[in-house]
Image (tube, rainbow, N blue to C red):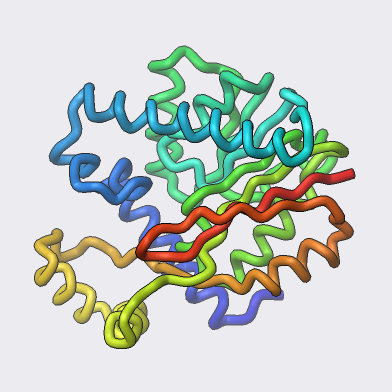
Length: 257
């Protein structure tokens, strides 16, 4: 059973994500100013969605370089947002499932899928909504999502997702290992999670809307993730760095034998 502190932190991140979905759906996925709602145009949205096509091609190629061909039956994108990656996955696979905690994000994904004429998509709120009696997934993917989820909860979700892989299936999960911040920024971020007025001040200083919720940036332990994968019985895995100047991140590729 989840303890009260764990649940409270989860609720906070869920409410923040729904707020992003309602007010800044595209910026909530890729935090670049041109993707803010007030800056969106048809060409900007097209650019946003095209970046997902490139990412899916790149990540599938990396998975197949590690483990050989990936079956193109069923795919899952955890933290699907507005469908940037889910839609191109649905073009590569017979069926694609998107999971996101935000009703507003899922509604925008549905609109994007309808505009694209894609009907082989299912949308869920949580891994627990996956039919346990249904077939597993040939490919499970998540990128720039777990860093926004409290670690204990994120580890539970990783375990739940990996257990939904079909035999021969591959997971590609993006993990934030270290955020490179000065001590005072790290302390400030910790306080902003707990004291709402401080987040308002930070928004004012950074010329953002006063009520824009803070995006959590949580750090995961690679050793703990690898121990989790081992406990679940996975023996075939690959770790590929995926960092920049602001963070040390990696994609964990896992194959189910």
